[in-house]
Length: 318
Image 1 (cartoon, rainbow, N blue to C red):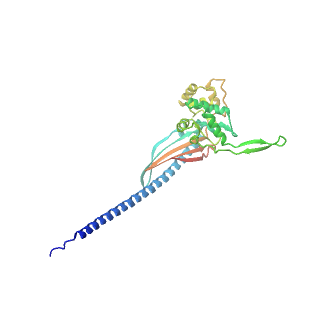
Image 2: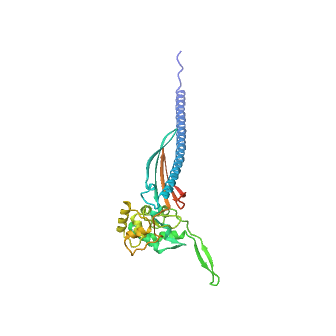
Image 3: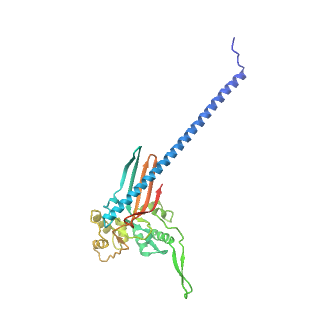
């Protein structure tokens, strides 16, 4: 028998059915591929978050190690100097764990924050201090920054301090406390957004200034020449560079008097509020790279209690 011939209409219907089936198969394939991609993305996100959590724990371990190093330095050295173990940075150290074939890379360093000028010194009880503003102004000039930055930063610091004022008619005076009008800055990064202070200005200031929870003096054994020349009125930058060159060659200062004697200038007066040789404030920075996760953390550590250095705050840097 001859096979039945399809009419043109029937052939068209069969062709449309085949095309519809192909379209359905293609749509299903696209949906399945999308599901697999979303699932793979979700899996990678979970793996990345797990890696970030593990990286944070490794950074916490690095912070604990830094505290031990600072404690040991306080026990063995009467001064804080750049030749100490704490001043040696850790670069690309490989960290592995038994049963885990992954390798983490750790880098970190400890900085002496008292080797920098403390912006909190700029004001007291809500009032900028002219002598301290002059210090920052000298530092800004040496760094090539425009004038006027120091007074603005001083006003910003003053605005974060409560002010106690006398009130009354003269026969019966009482004290009235005026609350701060702004939160206190915690780091140099918090200066961003102020007038004439952009990212470039912040990066220029970062190696030379800090923000500590209390007023502090500068450590002559760790401060750069620019900071010493700014803090010590009458000390030129050239003289400060000559002194720091000798210092970094190994002739560190035993105390403030030793520093003053080496200046060989009786016209320069130095107080304990300006210069010290022992530090209690340090910044611990660390970065851990684990697979696709890169985590950087910065912590301020106080060595007020030399036997137990304490973490004041820690911040993850994006």
